[in-house]
Image (cartoon, rainbow, N blue to C red; front, side, top):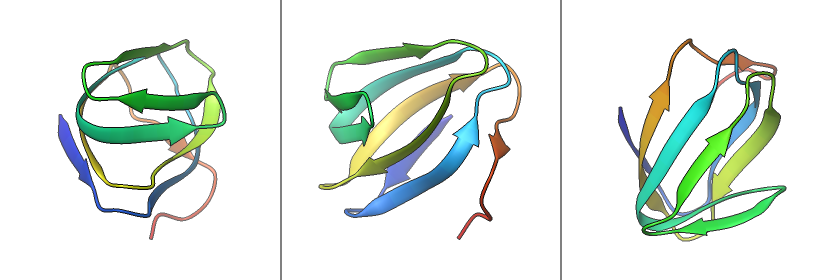
Amino acid sequence: GIFRLAPGAVVPDHVHNEIEQTYVLEGTFSDQDGDAHAGDFIWRPKGNRHEAYSTDGCIILGFFLKPNTFLKPLP
């Protein structure tokens, strides 16, 4: 799906139950591994755990084979 994160938005701590594939269309998408910018492709393995955020806002195209498990309540 296509997701829009407002400036300062946080995707709470979660685990990927299958691989994640994300393409950043606009802005910056970040986590503890660094920043991904427009045009970057991100691939994370099954079992990857992280909290993601966007300081300046972003639009991403994310492919998830199974829903993520969120470890904190969603806002």
